[in-house]
Length: 347
Image: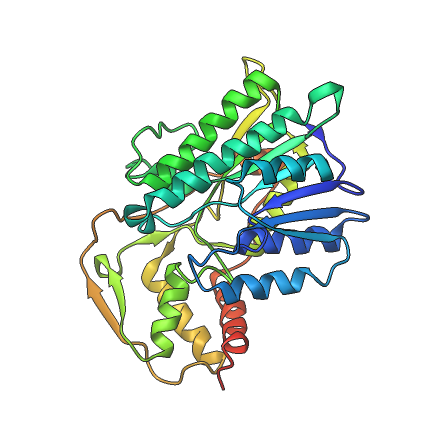
């Protein structure tokens, strides 16, 4: 794998006011000299915009951060950004997320995850026009959702994932296919990352741990499916960012047919028992002084479309990057509950 030096580079990060995007921007701005980051985000209201504004405000303290409010499905905007800033590395994190939302709002997924990603690929392709050096590496978010109802665990990137169980998963799989075609045809080095249940401070309120917390604070019961017998590969956001930063700096080796292309799982590879996770969350909320009463739990059967466990096989990632997440569930949830208390001003 050939190395990319990030110092002094211009990096384009889409979805820069999102959970992973904003944390990635902040770490890069702090760790690398003379780096310039251009962030794009449409600041949509899929969840509370106040959270996106909070993340954006933190980034606007950095003089070498440029924010553009816009949508990656706007081809002219993307072409203008590439022309004006000529990024060396592109990290595409902008996407319409969420499995359940894709059932009722499919248009948003085609717009952002398909048309938007296509616009990014086209702009990367044309970045080499007229002999220009162009984009050195495209890194993009895929998702553990591509595994669908895969029975084999841990989930491996060598598994067949041709039977998505949601439109969201189908759009993420399409990203991997599009990227492969563009890497093959135009030599764009690309790396896809299948993220596994990322959590932490200022995270996404549509994720289970955040939803649980909102209900617990209101004194409402939380629903625990399959009577708590479920496992999830939770990954703390700081670990994810460390992984993404490592990936950005290494161009993938060419496949047997000469394509500079790779897809990795990026997760904890240690599934956490859901009930243990909920109990740890309760403990952290009490320690942070957010609650002082026991959590009401309602045990329910398995829901349609849910999977029993998510479990990442991260052997390739560990081999290529020497990467292992280090944050325990207790530490991660403790950071989240402290942030929650301050953000929502809970006395």
